[in-house]
Image 1 (cartoon, rainbow, N blue to C red):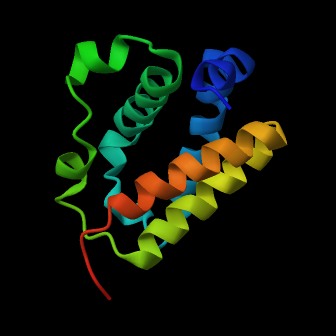
Image 2: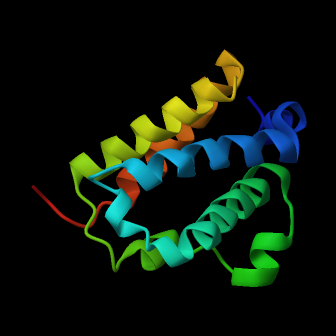
Length: 125
């Protein structure tokens, strides 16, 4: 599915709801929650939302604020192994379910999120 189609169907509101549902789970998660400082949770939520709007909708906000995504560099300070990547994916999957992301879009987003989550790994078990 074309990324523009995903954005057209979900729109900014759909991505915003999905990311908010994800971060509600992050706050409670004992494995990856501690990676997100409480004082920056709102900032982290905004950055993920803006990144997804950039990636799927070509929205300029992310690049205007942060420049090139450089995801590996930005995640380098965090110890991310297989368990953390898998848990991130589980929480995002739950967020997509909660916000009723259509199955065809969820399938496409899962493929994207899986690739990104595993590329962020910087620790071997």
